[in-house]
Amino acid sequence: MYDPMDEAVDDLFGRLQTLLREIPERLAKQSLAALFEDMALRQVLLEEGETEYPADPGAREALLARHWERVDALRNEFANNWLRNIQRQEF
Image (cartoon, rainbow, N blue to C red; front, side, top):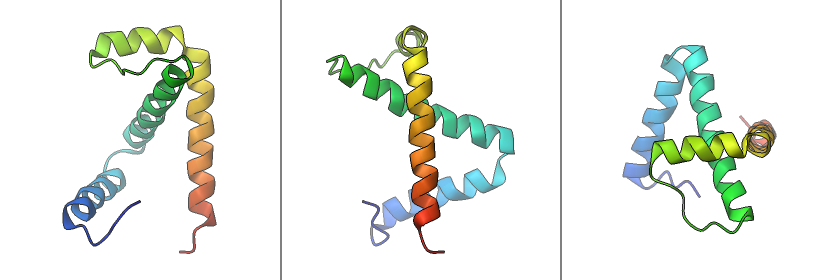
């Protein structure tokens, strides 16, 4: 869980928040999609019993291509869950 008392963590997430506000909208969307795609690919690999996530970008791209339909569906599910979680919070 996020701990605002941890200065290093608070600084990191503060810089990410600032960056998301300042970058062009399209880049922000691409970045968020990439984050959720990474999470989805990891989930797919776990479902298949794979315990290691490839460090090589080419290997990850090949896995994304091989599992794209499932990754795409999970990416959207994760994004929807994140959005709903934010919407339930009090501002």
